[in-house]
Image 1: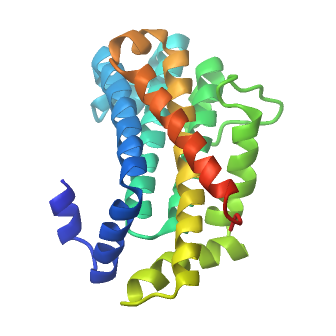
Image 2: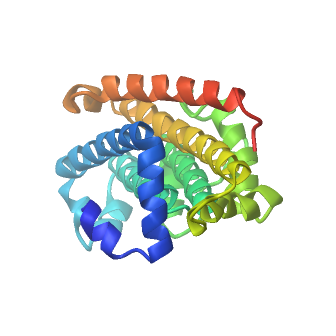
Length: 251
């Protein structure tokens, strides 16, 4: 998979990929472990509800009872969040940091929509009709914490989704390093600070996703071996990243 990915990249993306893996290999491995847990969770849900992977899934859910409809929509939205986080990882590896943060924000929003639809079958039906669930006055699951939600709206929006200053310069820091054979020390430091920050934000959303998913369907916690261990490793990695960020000036 890694070799196929590298062959499809441009020269600058290929250099960025090698540089990111070299500088942040352990954090990338931790990210991948989290994505594997989410993939396993979705696979188990689809195995329990095989019609979700069929072309008739939407019509099936529209006609289903409230519980089946809510859980089906929840599974589809959790899978969407997982795919967005996979895109986040690939974008981080290839130096597209602002787009990575944008995908992470969208992944968090997909989890919020999943929670709304799980607890309200009418909202699930609304989503099946290609409409946005109503979010006013919603109290989310405790694992979709206010702190993470605030970060998703504030940090991930300004650094990724919307064209604020941070979003426009973040990926330039990484590209400036790989574009030069002898990058200036200041450019390398800016790239590392920026990548530390991006990794922290994206790993936090990944950890939140795993905790939310296994809390919502407790059977998954027993079925997906190693989920708790992966969450623990991500937590430790987040602490280390936070310490590194604190030791530098935050971009």
